[in-house]
Amino acid sequence: MASKLCALADAISRNVADGDLIYAAGFTHLIPFAAGHEIIRQRRKNLVLARATPDLLYDQMTAAGCARKIIFSYMGNPGVGSLRIIRQEIESGRLEWEEYSHFGMISRLQAGASGLPFLPMNPTAATDLENRNPQYRRVVDPYSGKEVVVVPPLNPDVAIIHVQRCDVEGNAQIWGIIGEQKEAAFAARRVILTAEEIVSEEVIRSDPNRTLIPGFLVDAVCHTPYCAHPSYTQGYYDRDNSFYIAWDKLSERREEVHKYLEEWVYGVPDRAAYWEKLGPETHQRLKVASRLSLPVNYGEY
Image (cartoon, rainbow, N blue to C red):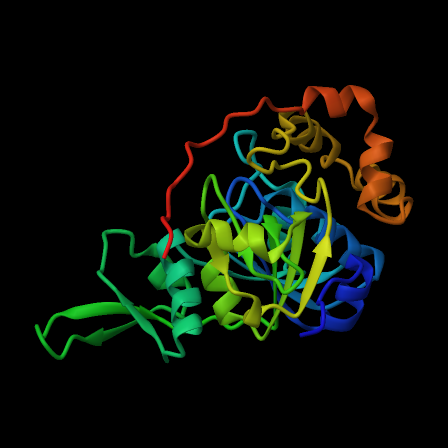
C-alpha cells in the first residue's frame, strides 16, 4: 500500500475546501495548531469550526476570517478568561453558533461515528441549552416510556488529529489525556493526521492497545513536530501557559491580533520555521523530563 505521508500544506490543500465543516480534535493537549495555521495561510473561508473546547486555535482562525459558524461545548481561554475574538463575533451577529454540553458534543460525534440518526442522553437540570439550541430534541424511550434528550449526528468533512506517533499508513497512537480523537476520526469523511514522530509498523504493532486510530480511516499523514504549541504534547513538550496569558491581553485589540497573524502565521512558511522563530529560551522552557511507563509483556505465540 502506498505511503500517505505528505507535507501539511499539501494535506490541507487537497482535503480542506471553503465551506467545509472542520473538527480539530484534542482535549487539553494534542491541539493541532499547526494545521489551523496552515488553513489560515491558505486563506480558507466560510468554514464551520466544530470542537469540544475551541481554545485559542479557533480564536485565531476566526480572527483570520476563516469561520462563518462555530459548534462547541465550553468556550474560553483555559484558565485565563474569554475567547475575545469569537465572543465579539458572536455578540455582533457576524458568527453563527451552536452550543452543547461536553456530553452532548461527544454524543453527536459518537452518533456520527456509529452511523446513527441520533443518540439519546438522560435529561438533566441544565435545560437552558435545550431552550436555546433547537438541535436538542426529546423522544419517548420505547422501553420505559420516559423522555430522553437526543442530539443529531455530527459528521465533519475533515477531522484534523494530532498524535504522538503513527506509521506511514496512519495507524496512530496517543497517550496521556484521551479526548474525542477516535470518535472524530470515525465520524469524519476525511482525516488528516499530524504526528510528532513517524515510526515503523513494528513499533506500532509492539503496543497495539495504544493504537487509537486505524490507518484505513486516514487520508493524509504529516510529520509535524511541535504541532500543538502553545498547547502541549504529553511526553514531548509542555504547555506554554505564558502564551495563553499573553493572548488574553493581545486579543483585546484587533490590530494586535492581525500583527500576530502577520508575523507568526503568514510570516512563516511552516511549523518548523515557527518553532525556530520561538527561539531557544522557549524551547528550553517547554522541555519535559522523561517519565517512562513500565513495559507490558504481550508474550509470544
